[in-house]
Image 1: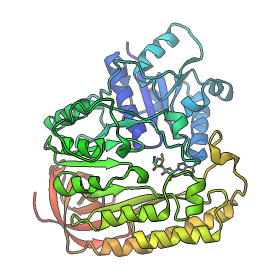
Image 2 (image 1 turned 90 degrees about the vertical axis):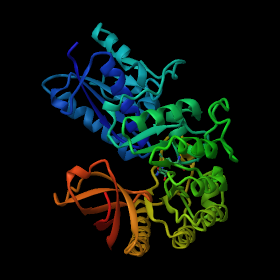
Image 3 (image 1 turned 180 degrees about the vertical axis):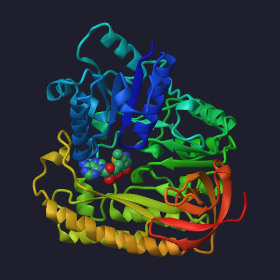
Length: 443
Ligand code: SAM
């Protein structure tokens, strides 16, 4: 079979990991991959539905692809596929295939049905027993940093969020499998693994297997210790959910130097009234207690977060609560989102929508505050020595290399491509708003 497949990936790391997994299966089934959509016989779009804009982009792309002279088979996979299901065929007649979030491993079989002449093929079914989270190293986005999913889905049902509907309930992968994958990645030369999931710290596998020798207050902190023992150089994890953030995670970070000093803990709002309406299950004070544990660690942990502005009913006083919380937390980085109404979520039925103009002005005010705080935090890094995994040449200057520190900051320094994949110490000489610059003093 000589069919060439092109996959376009939107959204979060889970989608990147799903694409890697899909490509592994497609290659095994004899498909060739291409990086040019106009050369492809099959075009798959791995979609995101967290915000409306991402969803609209998919349908715009389908109408562009429809005009391609090669008339490829067009498939929609991921969150939009799971949520919209068969209605995608009505909305975009050019789509031949709809692949739900748990059907990634069955794509070759679905394509065979299309080759056999079947029209409008759809699979929104669950993962089947025996389907494994297997990703061939050749399909990974980077030869040095690997995403390792440890939990899929979400049980939290925050009122704004579509994820529980698009990705189903939480399902944790066995610790034995995760540890074996990390060991394999280490033997292949990977320097960093990122344990990923919507809420990694809600990790709850069906059995204790693989965790028996590891102490800890929660299965997640036991898993962190188990993964640390593999000896892989760097371990990061994202995203953590505040309600399930046990202080033992910080203890694990203090015990194991290869667990990186960075925590991503989305707060969403600083107002208790809004947090309640968001159904987050925590107050601002609960969140600040977690932050206190993180910030008081001798390990100097970096902290990043997500915030939604303009949630229905958010007034100026609520927004000022958010501004106050951001000032207090001094985040190393912050993703700010304007609330996007997702139909099917409880918040979609709330009155008191915030106007687009107000959302924009709150977004800009919060961004300005974060930039000013972040500038200080980044400048404070000057004179420090950070350990950096060198990933690639900088896009700005061919004389510079770029990578991430253990605290997940982008670090640029004068270097050359022979350093790719190595871990170097960089003495920081300059702090910019979103990156650091320095001189390599080792490696
Ligand atoms: N599960 C994680 C949590 O809630 O703690 C984050 C997952 S979500 C894919 C990533 C971020 O997108 C969220 O933290 C939230 O800030 C943002 N987000 C989710 N739904 C949104 C919506 N309806 N409108 C705007 N932003 C949204």
